[in-house]
Image (cartoon, rainbow, N blue to C red; front, side):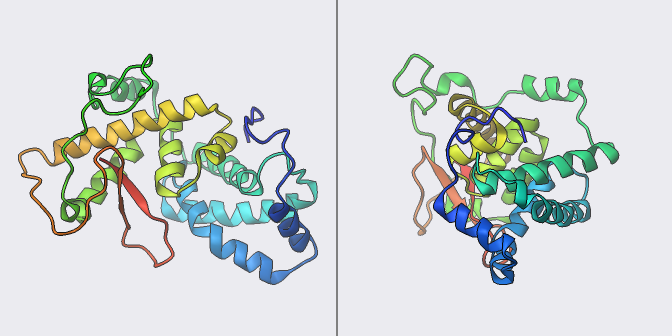
Length: 249
């Protein structure tokens, strides 16, 4: 994990983390089973950001569990246990991704950054108390459009094309539901950087969805709508306990 942890290096681990670590070190199989049930699917999804196939991500997660169990006696609690665990996943996944030759050339990153996302003049500028927020809320989309499989595919493909940190930030915040503090601790970035990266990633998703919906009337829906300045929540046709995802409105 990046050593520049911003919100956890000097903080003692929480009581919950301490109890869980103690239970795991004592060989409590129920505690380990609960932990795997809670985190494994998310770990696989996170590993997929670095490797070429779902099968590779599954293998990375399995290797990470072995590393987690082996490393627990050395866990010092200077960051949340969850962030420490996902740091192991990231390290294993990066190594696997390098072996698989999965890398993004600098030219591709430059091309992506040059593409028009949502124009910046649609947001309040850095000097405003409303910095980063919409100057005028965009037209909300009907929920039935947002829930279509092709719409979810656009979101997934857009996130996949994002460069490293933006992809990780939006995956942790909007796919896995991590808090800003957890995300900063995991990635070793400041709160300000996290906000910028998340805003840019959401802006990219919003722009691709606007192009996808071009020519369609948003229409009205009997279903309730999320605020246009927030995120629409949707589920990804996964298992019942899969996390909720969000589409920038």
